[in-house]
Length: 146
Image 1 (cartoon, rainbow, N blue to C red):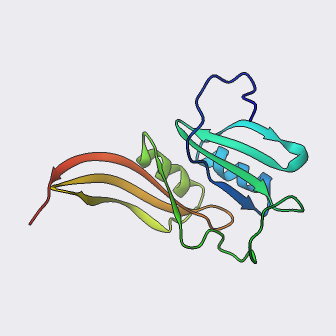
Image 2: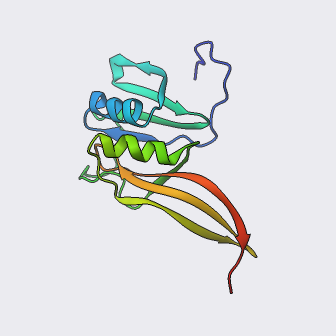
Image 3: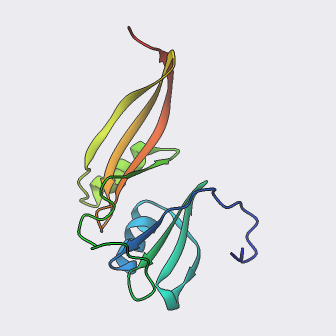
């Protein structure tokens, strides 16, 4: 993959999401979520996006797509993409102002890791094709409550 002069690193795992309308997806991902287009291939209706170290590829489905079964909404059933952000509260405010209803409202959740729990403020939202995105921001650690 050519780097187009960019000196940033490539993530070890980058999901490529098939979308029904690349322009609508870019408006959501770049406009509301504030990802940036790292590079694109307009002739293939493809864009490689990033937000900090998080990276994702979007491709409008067509003849070149790798479709393994019927595409039925919501797309991406069975997965959610966790994306760490610096300010999940501001992201939530932008989504609410745009009339986007969250799949799961902004709340703090605690996840056990051995004898400690990691806390994160998280918000779940679906993109225009139904992909479930979980935006989170760390809020600290605590001992496991027994």
